[in-house]
Length: 424
Image (tube, rainbow, N blue to C red; front, side):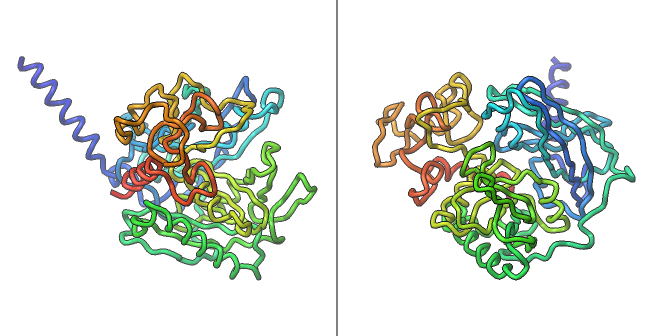
């Protein structure tokens, strides 16, 4: 009995120590930026370290360091080299995985993609693991490498030649807030007043939606005046190629409206020394389009009639990990296996619906729920690009159509929980 009591006593102390993990015990108030190359095809993938950088301050989470609010399509794990304890964890998604899962090209062509991740600068030697998951949420490739903080080849950046930027929104507490940078793409020097106006309009649009509106004081927003040599963005389908700050372009993966940048290193170089963790790229174009990638960036055009709902929708992807709630009549590449519960909080295959929004559904509401326009919380078939087998919480939502003016109650709760995760 004494041995059992001793064992449970030690276990209790261990759990308490993990729960009370202190940022200052393991990290400095600096950022370690790690650039990777993800390459391969559907049959074989590889992760390689490119470069390491040190930036002057850390603007990410300081609590719940070894937890993530959503699993993501990949994770970066930081462990003490000495004790092997997990001391930092973050999740993400990538264009590389989209390309692998959703294109024919990946079946016969090897390509590489830039990826950049930010972690707090460790005080001591750490082992960093990057793992990518397939559509069934099983690891498909991973890399572990060791980082010695005193390594003389870690570049120090962000102390000079910082891109001009303006603070648009001050948080109530700079130590408990979410840092967002609006980045100019396709704006020439003389067009920066237009960019600042677009940035203000974007901020107003985001904070007109709940729960962002009620939690506005937990955000810091800066507008980064990164100049381009030419206005606009590239449109390969029209034979138009522009020389812009981030070399963004439409027709990503030959999808006409998919606007992205593949130049993540350039983007983070422009942001060095600026307070940021999340990125919203504003593109000086009248064409409809955009894209959002979890914990990477949100990129949207600014001067189309539907630009406002698009940038908010894409921020739902990049910031909160929300899934698209619409469906295609013909889905060439099924994104969500029907026997696996998606990690995104706003869609379900009913495999584990109890872990999602089952508690928000009235006992009188049938599951699946018939498609009516009363927007009662239920399970409406057709989501995650699939007409059948994947379900959304409400008939309509900002994550489904541009016409719906709000996030549905389930998406609102998911966003609120995520904001609380990072700021409490």
